[in-house]
Image (cartoon, rainbow, N blue to C red; front, top):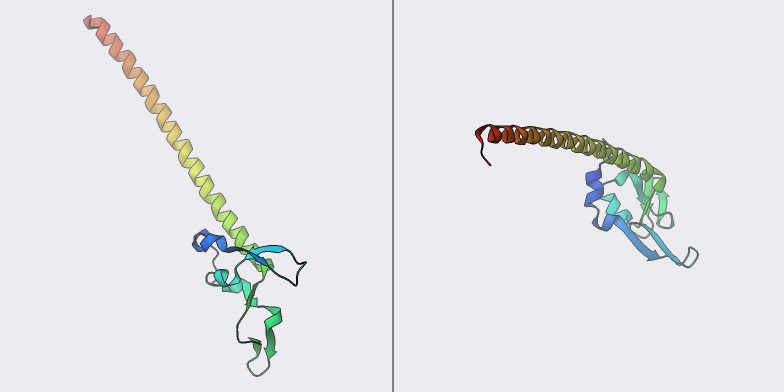
Length: 131
């Protein structure tokens, strides 16, 4: 079963981001994700590159023309994975915000208790005439 996860994103070396020069596309530097790296964790979003694939009727699937198995990403499928990652991060963020709020409340309560104890101590010192 397909389950996107932030942990999978964290395993990608360098986030899977690569810079490359693709001479057939506007002759300029391109950026993208490494299909080979993404394939380790999300094979559902990777396919044979169009320039290296042909349909084999006997096997009823696309195969590599060259045998090199060049890969490409189906970026439209990667959107779902990204949205799930955002959702997970949002939930983690909310949980952390709640923990912070709870800790801040505990600190405030402790500071109030401390202030009360200091006031009580001062009263006791005055009563006992201790400086």
